[in-house]
Length: 71
Image (cartoon, rainbow, N blue to C red):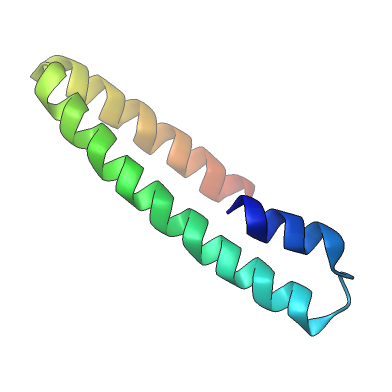
């Protein structure tokens, strides 16, 4: 990812190569986040009790709905 960031920094933003690299980097970052998210939620599922899980789920839904409303 660092190499891609460097490549973006060195490439003109109006260049088609910049957009192609940005898309590749975006895909790589999203893939990495999904992997980390899975690990995190598996660990949280083992560590949190049911009440804590419900509380966090409620907070998540509230925040999600607020973000949707903001557009």
